[in-house]
Amino acid sequence: MKEENKIKHKKPISKILIIIIIAFIIVIISARYMTDEEFRNYVDINILKKEVLESTLTTIEINTDTNPSIYSYDKYITVLSKNKLKEYTVDGKIAAELDMSISVPLIASNEKYMVVAEKDGQKLYLVSGTNILWDGEVEGTISNVNVNRNGYVSIVIKNTTYKSVVAFFDVSGTELFRSYVNTSYVVCTDISPNNKYLAIGEVDYSGTVIKSYVKIISVESAQKDPENSIVYIYESENGNIITNMNYQNKDYVICMFNDYIQKIRIGSNEKVYEFNTNDLFIDINLKNNIAIVDKQSSGLFSYEYEIVIKNADNKLESLYILNSDLPKTISTSGNNIALNIGNEVQIVNTSGWLLKKYTSSKQIKGLVIGDSIAGIIYKNKIEIISL
Image (cartoon, rainbow, N blue to C red):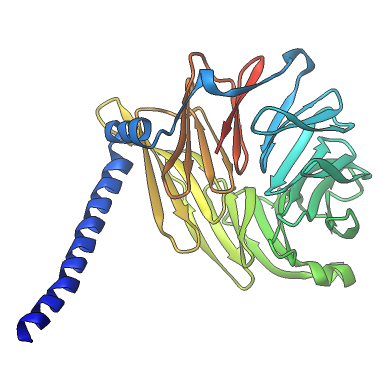
């Protein structure tokens, strides 16, 4: 009986040892994958098959003479030209052709919604899937647009009797309220994922020192008493100008200034990141993360480049090493980060893992990315990558 009990005890111990060894191997492989470019390229190309070839992709033909505006959201590549918005699916087929009186667009998207407005004009549209949900016109001119994941829209209007006006619409196009700003200029806005709060980023140039303010407005209160609907105000450090904001959670908005990034919630705020001279690109338009492309010295006159992906909630960081490849541009959507490296595109997720790698025989003109689709832009065509 004792011998049988010993054998029974050995079996669970052996299983635990095997699990530990496997976990250890996974950690080592993952660490090498993240930091060793040659090893990562071998795994991506030969094992994970993440490299896509130029000759195998679906292509959309475009006419540069018509000055097309190209964008991506959700699962579509969109091309706006001659007052018509064409939406293309991943197989290159036209899903919709929508009439729009837009010549120079301001565009913002969030998951299944996209708002399109005339820059310095009056017209705007809300699109979802293959349909225009509503369109409208405003007095004054539109300088900024925003939409949340539920289709609620905020727009910044200038050239009225006020320095700035912020108009707020629900998904049906009903205007719920307006916020009038008479002392500052509104640079950006964002709407919480639960539709309860509107964040407004303002810059005041009137004093001896430039100041920025982030005002959090209760949507419910604003519909009853707009003048008393502000539930929190954050004042920036001296000389800092707010440039962008993004509600990454229903409770807090991430705000980017020219020197730092601040996480702001009702009743409190904290600094998430302070810029330094090695930072090349910073993007806050991700789900719960901030992407920072920076350079690190690798010799007397040489640098290596990396993406630090920082979670604004739990402060955890992921790393993706680019080595000697300097990105020309960075585009983001949801959990996707796309880097244009001239003749190459690398698309990484917020965990620091490569999703797709694309190499071109010629210089890439531009890059757009949605939640499940990306477009590589050339002079006369767009090549589509499925994510």
